[in-house]
Amino acid sequence: MPVPSSLLRRLRRLCLGTLVVLAGLVLLGASYQQIGQALDRRAVHPPGRHVTVDGTSMHLHCTGEGGPTVVLEAGALGFAQVWAWIQPKVAERTRVCSYDRAGLGWSDDAAHHDGVAVARRLHALLRNAGESGPYVLVGHSLGGALIRIFATHYPDEVVALGFIEPSHPDQLERLPPEARAAHERVVRTLTVVADLTYIGLLRLANPLGRLHAGLPADDYRAACMFTSAAPHVRTSQKEFAAWDRTMAAARANLSVKERPVVVVSGTEPMEGMSPEIFALNHQLHAEIAGLSKHGRHVSVEGASHMSLLTRRDHAEQVARLVIELVDSVAR
Image 1 (cartoon, rainbow, N blue to C red):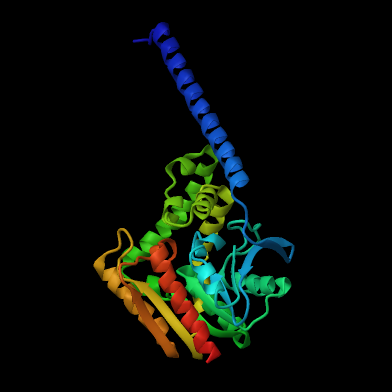
Image 2 (cartoon, rainbow, N blue to C red):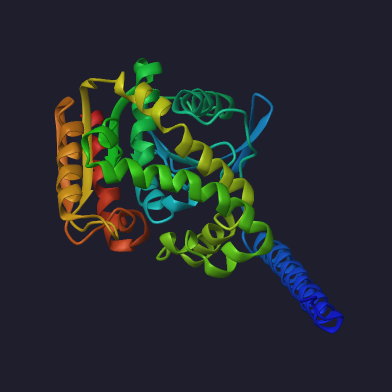
């Protein structure tokens, strides 16, 4: 039986109307994204200065005086301002620098995002900025693996290391299989999420920005701005995708020998983390502390993976441990 022409016309109008509505929503979302980003950039500003490294403009924020210089390395999706509670406290004792890796935060992008490329760029950044060593390196999460790579490549410039909820080079191999599956899911998801930033969906839902809730107001607003923008999300995806290369390079740093080391863990699991994985993760943290004859493994009661940076009282406990690390070098 032939389809009535009146029904075909109604179907065509319905399809056309649906497309018009969708196009309107996309345009509305894109406008929401652009206006929101513009307002954010008018309200918040980079706390540090820009230094050129191999043609790439990178953001470096250094405060305090004295030595050794503490260098802060953020974790995945991180940026200089995640240290907003910790850096001022450490700066009361010595020079301390935070920065944005290439493609993250206020820094322009660069070609490679594996751990060796990151370490080399950081070394050049410090050199070009005139921030001389020796260095006490402090890394959170993925940053823990990155500072091990830096120490491998520039051992004479590193006098101590601090690890905050660090990634272990073997964690995806030693944790249950769901850890590897979750990691691969993150890589795939961030690929899609980066595209959604253009139509404002990530800004509206703010799932990545909320990870940094608890930071001072301007720094939290910067977090929401960065994590809802395509460049920051795409670079984060590339860092996750380079995980195996990064961890292979970190694995080469088997011992920190005589250097003082502190490893800081939380006592509360991340959302969705099973008790089994949490316990194994804690064991891996202890192993990192055991790399040094002068290693300490400290737990902050009630803290979680992110709250060690974002919750002021937890962050201040971390700052005190970093200052103790600096003092141990001085002694």
